[in-house]
Length: 141
Image (cartoon, rainbow, N blue to C red; front, side):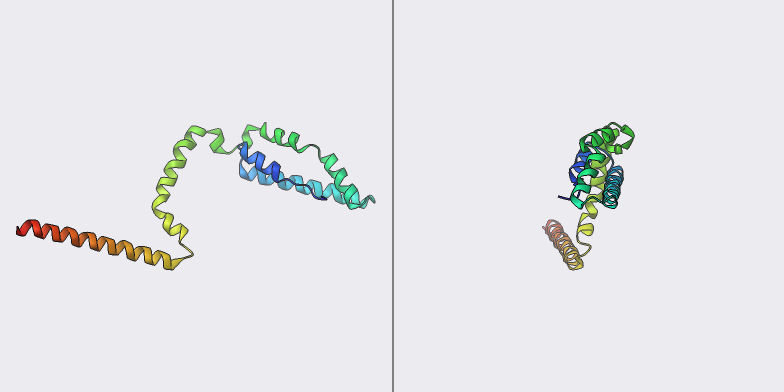
């Protein structure tokens, strides 16, 4: 294991409510810093394994870094900073997008959308014809 694994840090920060853009930036900066430390160790004459171990030691404990990021409330996403607003906005947004869901999901499958629309039109015609027959039966009786 020569490289540093930042996936646990990434998932922990996201779970704690840090905004995804800040998580991406933090992970990218840590990865770049780790790579720089490894390159510095390699240029000093160490082998790859020793350079990676030294870089991990110089970088510090990832739990401490995660706790330091978590302690900054300005890095949290708006949904975690304003949970009551998010509890209203998210359901309304999903409700507004619900009628468009077949189009978004089936965008790459135009044939499915065409069949869906044809079935929708056919069911509307059948329903309208049934109402027409019922109206005529009521009127003529």
